[in-house]
Length: 172
Image (cartoon, rainbow, N blue to C red; front, side, top):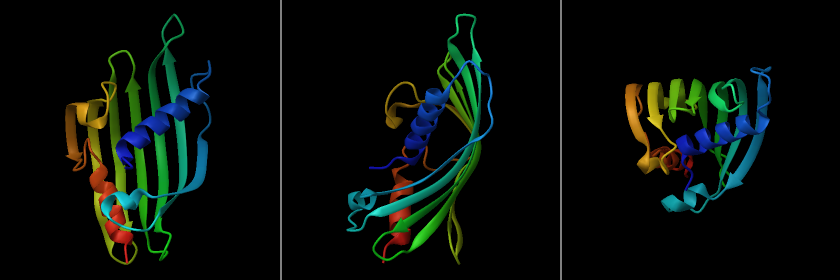
């Protein structure tokens, strides 16, 4: 089952680490793509979900005197389209946030618009926004340690509710 928060954190941290170089900062990267997968089958639907994305991110890195990555700050702006491949019904997603990963203290901070979902013609149906500080280094999302939360984070740490909501909204 797709888990948006864990998928996003793992994807972004993985992409950034793979692109890490001795330089402390670089120009923004743009990631565009599309994938079709059976995410909605887990919620009893018989359609596949296509996710299209257009993400801009810019990261800065801090290293200790031995060259170990100790702090990574990533600014992310992303737009998503979630589409039922059977009926072409879709909803829109947006994020504009800063993710700071402190590898020494094993803490991640997300600040900004973590996720907003909007149904065309109806408006916003989910807004996850504010600041959250947590430890995702301890295992799967159900084991994450929450240190601080301000704003609205109704799906932390298990964002399968978002997956179900997306599937419900694009169903026939």
